[in-house]
Length: 315
Image 1: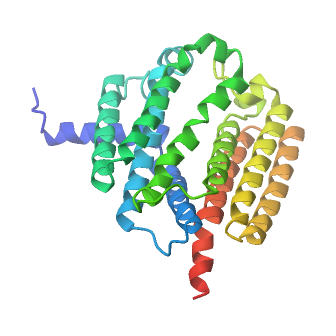
Image 2: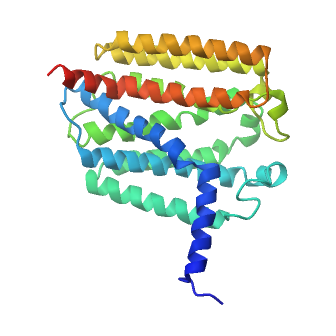
Image 3: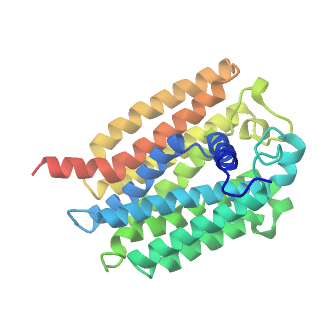
């Protein structure tokens, strides 16, 4: 029997995890979005309170904690959907035996320990906000103990689950205002609201597919609501996220640049949606998903990072 430290065994384990992350949590795809999210949360908070800089250590903790938190969301889904995945999606890493739920559980515990340590080191009261996010994550993983009821109501399911984003936003923004030992700045609610609707943009966008791409047992919004209704809902939440972001940008006097971005993106989204309705070619759902990611990154950059660049360019 090989020892635990056998190089061949270590290579096999690292290769398995590399495949898992490529398939279920691609770092190079999610990383830029999470970085934009965490920096924007801190940047927007700092701009509202008139600060001229961000603490690098706080920004680093915010990013790493956010990265681990979204990974924990993925791991929670692996546990929650294990039975359905085994039945309908045997090609996924867990049902095909690449990674076990036990291994994922240890990974979640390890990342939680690092989040806790980082929060305690940066500012101990941050732990309370982290626990609040963890608590809501646990409720989500249990479907709020209303699994059957929520399964029959996909809109209620989405609305309840997306609340995790503004809840975690509370932690991310606190890496600025709490670390600075001040009260949450007025106007922060617009960023939280924009993040809430942005979550829906991503959620709906990744679950719109062409008829040829639908899978048995996978409840996409294009299947549940119909392709046209799902695309209309996607455009609606995109518009709502833009409205909230513009309200937030008004407090920074940054409405015009962001308005131009949103106008161009919304026109492009409408064009994409119309093309998808009239010609639902296989793979076109992927275009909607990618567009959702670009929209989200653009919103976060425009709300919490671009104003910083403009601010410092003036001086």
